[in-house]
Image 1 (cartoon, helix red, strand yellow):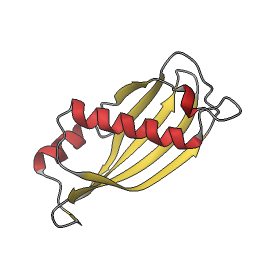
Image 2 (tube, helix red, strand yellow):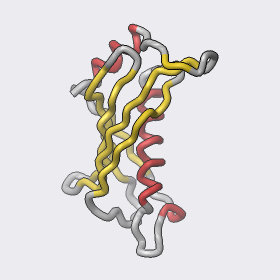
Image 3 (cartoon, one colour):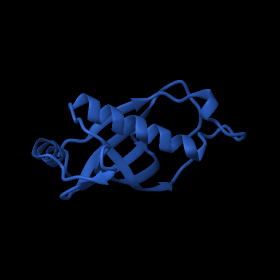
Image 4 (cartoon, rainbow, N blue to C red):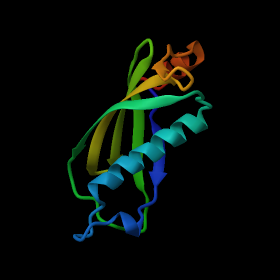
Length: 127
């Protein structure tokens, strides 16, 4: 199993009035991590988020150090796959998410089967 690690800087503009990272910013951080994963592995094509479930577990307060985001694959189907993601430090998990993504054909606006090279890459990241 190979988890993808992304170190995400916190932005002052992502804070709420209580000094916590706003809940919507967690979704952007997770998206940045997924994009980094795909680009770093040469994972091309068009894939769209079909479902996103997130649990907020602990407040993430602003600081200068980046936060860790770990991403790994939990399921690979014919045209979709699921990613598990955690925003965390070594000793605390701030949020967890499950993201279902679908391979997408922009010309037909329909799902498409995952190409074999993408399926193999996803299998390498499966936990």
